[in-house]
Image 1 (cartoon, rainbow, N blue to C red):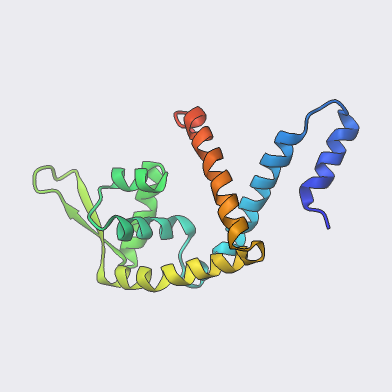
Image 2 (tube, rainbow, N blue to C red):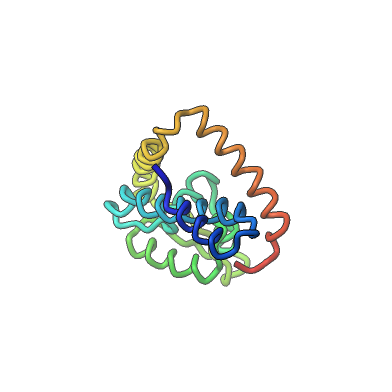
Length: 167
């Protein structure tokens, strides 16, 4: 059985027989995997009415274990400030996040989970991780570790080369 990228590689080889398609094989497969995983991995979140980026904000507030400013939260979640502001508004409306003005500078906000937000994330993280584990289970634990190591190596290289570029 072949993956969806195999046919694309064959097509490029027919059009450009001398073209090294290895980069297409890697990036095409990573992109396709990311798309499929994003669609599948959000099922438990969707049931809770959360988008993945909102879950990431809640998770960051939980795992860091202290209040964060919107700028710090943007850094923790690899998001833009504007995106964080939009997501925070929705999470505040749902009563999952609360904002406290800084005592010295009223323009600065400190964000934390509400009690309801802590309960939701405490319940949802194990469910989400379990669901994601089931998506990867056919690979086996050793192959998952190997894949995680290779992806980590690639990420370090890309962050070094592209880390300063706008995405």
